Length: 148
Image (cartoon, rainbow, N blue to C red):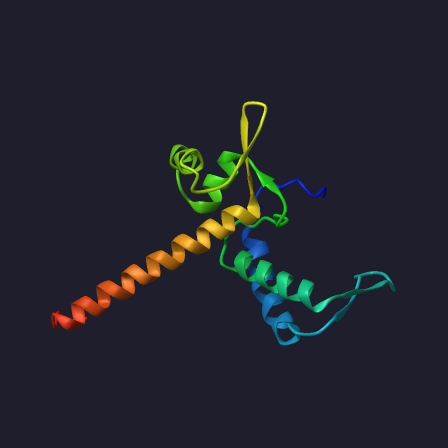
């Protein structure tokens, strides 16, 4: 996969979900160590670095929940539709955020491109703001003895 390529999400089948559940449970104890994996039907072995094992377990855990998964390099550039899908917002909403300078982007011809890392920075920022607002509402509710 080239550095700027994103792949379409892969939705697991029922069989994939069952296999992912079993595999993620078996791999979980090895999260923080390199892992030697034997290729079935061969004498070939591959050593996976601990970070790859963690990613693999995360990927399998998502598949075990029936979620579609994809890999996106941090330095990847996304289309506005891909970026909107990742944030679970409409494309017009995302474009407003881009045009208002809330999320950095660049133009390639007439097309906007968003860096994955910029999109994740935005997501973390709004998630943090959302949590702060919820904490403040909960504190106010307690001050007013609303039973929360």
